[in-house]
Amino acid sequence: MVLGASAGGVEALCRVAAELPQNIPAAFVVTLHLSPFAESNLPRILERAGNLPAKHPEDLEPLRKGIIYVAPPDFHLILEEDRIRLGHGPKENRHRPSIDVMFRSASKLCGPRVAGVLLTGNLDDGVAGLIDIKKRGGLALVQDPREAHFPEMPIRALEALKVDWCLSLAEIGQKLVELATKPQYRLRPQRNRKDETPHRPGKANGEENKTGTPIPLTCPDCQGPLWEYRSGELTNYRCLVGHRYSLESLLAAHSEEVEEALWVALRTLEEGVALQRQLSESARARSNSIAAACFSARASKNADQAKLLRKVLEEHSS
Image 1: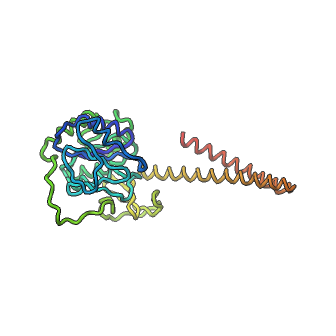
Image 2: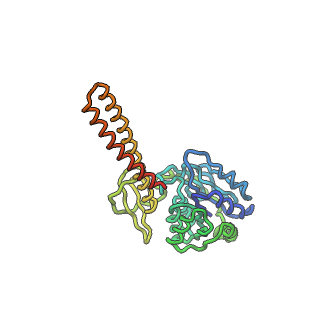
């Protein structure tokens, strides 16, 4: 069972965890969008909320039933041969960990044996991964958007695919318990891996190479060229090194870039005003009235431009 959440996800995950009994014959793997700069207490929070142990896994840790595994900050969580890999590969939808990365790896590993759950959050990380789970015969569960604190992710999933269930958080927990008792969702025994070659996680986030169409946009994360990839109704964008975006996340990223550029422009204008006024005062002190007037006029013009730009930025953020 794989669960993804973003904004409002801690409370949502706690309510699902509270429904899961001890000794449940399934493993639960969670990705929540986290800050890469802060320690995550989510495993301890989930343990207190429910009946199952929860942890940040180590790389290559075997996947065991009756445990909630939580992706650690700044690492993709990838399922591979009934074990867990932690990858520091390219961000997807500007997130690491990414829900899509976890969902895709689970669908490849488990096929029809996986159930994917998408909970509260903004934008649409997880939707493409949920589609992949459905294509490989797995099940898709979505939190009822009317209950979600941030309904955008569930709404995007409901728009993009036919989910199996759209449920409240309590009902999602109960449904996962019901599914865990079915043989196809029980964890298979570990394989003998003595002769296996270890996988290097994050090389391309587990995604096979495909031919895309170059587009006249650059990657917001690395400023490299972008390619457009279409699969049915789904469109995503990837750069050469592997950063990946949905259309909505790409639009949001470019909007952030525009705002950052405008703040830089505002800072530059206001620094120019300060320098021009200083030059005007210096010229006036030397009795150079013509230069003083010239610098003062430039300062006034730049101050007006800065005032207008600040108004645009304040209206944009309101």
